[in-house]
Amino acid sequence: SKRLSMNVLMLDQERVIVSRGEDRLIQAFKEWGFRPIACDFYHFESIAGGLHCATVDIRRRGSLESYF
Image (cartoon, rainbow, N blue to C red; front, side):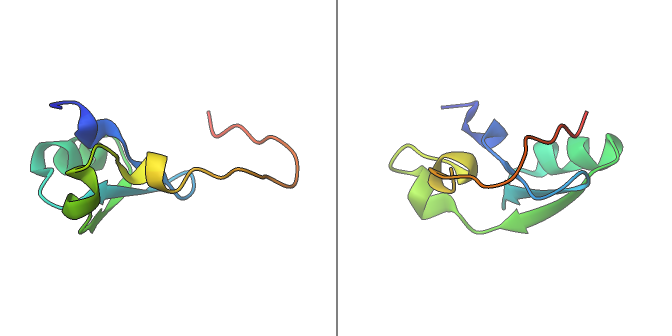
């Protein structure tokens, strides 16, 4: 999918893990004030999944926090 690159993992208010090779997306994040971290994740994506899907938590402790 062309839009699989948008499947990223936010670590905090600034840092975002992005699949290596998504140069346009990485540049866009930099322009928007984020700190992208490129990560080799191609082999997982080839079977239809991205960073966010692969790291989704099934249990969460603490209170809901908004970064917006």
